[in-house]
Image (cartoon, rainbow, N blue to C red; front, side):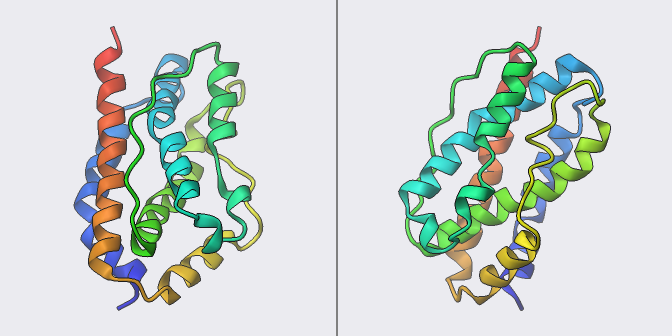
Length: 177
């Protein structure tokens, strides 16, 4: 079984929880869209920084084109909001943790593309519609499957990233009056 299939199966429950939570946001309503972006801004920069500190560019030379923090920050600023406090970055030890983490981040781009359809044209949506190099997802999935890393360590890292997204969403929802 491919690593992507193992990760999909072993993180399905976490993925469903995150989808359920973030599915409560109506992205056509500016305030809810802003809250949605703020939740992502609590974790995406920390995760991307942790990946860089752990040497992600060794695994994916096109990493700089895959990052989305700047698009996320630009969207939040355009909405006239301040950036939220970041959650602590995940501890990423070993190549398997990098691949598990990337599995969640890269997968979120697919979900983002679907969610972007709900965002009205007058709202910024750079974060949900990043301009990735052609074939970037296929390249990622091929490299993921060819990585040969320990499944359990990749699964553990992916579950941890899903948990970070869940925590960030809950924090932002609690802050809404």
